[in-house]
Image (cartoon, rainbow over all chains, first blue to last red; front, top):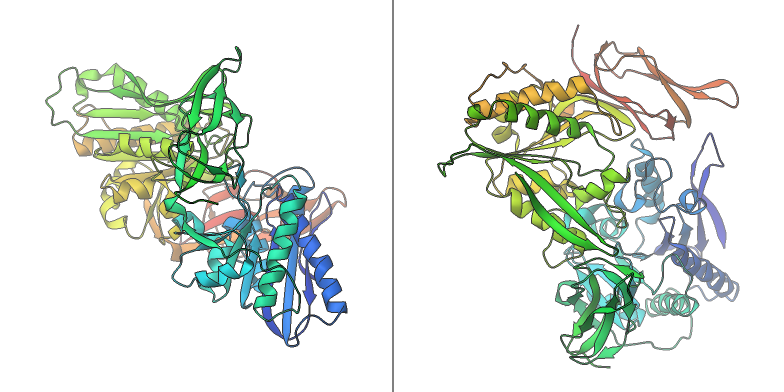
Length: 311
Length: 312
């Protein structure tokens, strides 16, 4: 393992930002794995730390295939993470809205450029990402349909689902999008958590990346074959909303199979405790996403279902 | 008359309401033109609040001069304004990156879609912004290259100092202005002043311009000023000055003043060591139309934008 300082920025009031990359193996740039770009992506950083630990052992056992190099960048925004913020401390900008970056531009553009400078030119780019909607997801691999994507490769992670998303204008400045535009096969891996550590899904995420690297001939590793993924398009997911605002009482978990008419959730009057409404499943399917906060607004998406899919 | 454009239940005994004031002639013919003045998308930008007040006040003072419909939306992000939050509270997302919204999407995208629906069909929209808390801007209109030809005649009426024609960027397709322009509602983005403050002079200058624009469009036949001729520039004439060190920025120039190439714009100081970390210079002759207001800077923080040319 070779630890490299890939980006540094001084700060007058606190320690400077050091972004480290961990290199394994030598030769062709095969895979780059990026963790926390936001200060609340604790789970994403944790997964990378576990990958660094595993890859270190694999390298010691000569299990990195010759002429393949892997780079892991566990954390890029610990200046925010250390003070409990999500975005860049001074100006609240999001590093994952600044790619490909600009080394003479604004602060987070410079950080993004520093990362992209070393993270590009790899054959495969894997980012442990978080979504702007707070809630719990089924673990999945997400790809953007940029015209450069290769969805069949995403199956090789062995996670239950591959989600294809049509990029919107706001997506064009993300790491994933820019990786694809610059000839890297890019994947975003989502687990059940962001600002908490979920050991079970973290282990699944580590295993999925090792499985993928094995199947791409980058490492020698014997892992369980995982799932044959079901591929879904994001716009085909069925949104289920809450007609009322109040306290949210969830009756389902991500990954659970539901039947039409099953109770998904209840909304409770926040002061009187009465049930204001029961939200029933409008279809048979699998729960892909659920709202997880204790409070809910009127009209909020409390659940997204993969329609007419069974376990 | 106050109308509610959006109303969404919040968890505990409250509704999020986006409201507009509709000011119109007593008798409608059905052929009136409609102008929308919108602001408060970013909760820390307050310059538009005074503009809304003053516009409404003057319109109510001379209702007989009004020949069209004026819709005033002071707060597209009312919870953000109330909580000094730039984005949408609880959502942590820039509201001006979710347009045109989605009626079937998350609540915030539903709200964006309802705003777009409400403005649609108008003959003009003026979207007032106030930079952010970091930078002070002269009164200006920003238009993209693809909309410049259509929007420039309107922008010239707004009595602003400067029109910046910038390159089209894909990410800006998520803004309200792009959405409305693509929907056939000419929309001018005004940037002026600084976040969390109200600059009365700028506010009055823009209100004068809105009346001039309304007169130009036949919405107002009362008194209006002859708008000042703005400087019109493209990206090619704009130089950016960024910090390369962290510390406190002390400006050595006045905002909206001429500067010569190599003259000092300001310094970045280190309070702990009592040292000048960096001195920042003008990249060419021109005018400082954006100047850092908030003193704390990181490497990369924008310090100034200079419009090239001779303004002596």
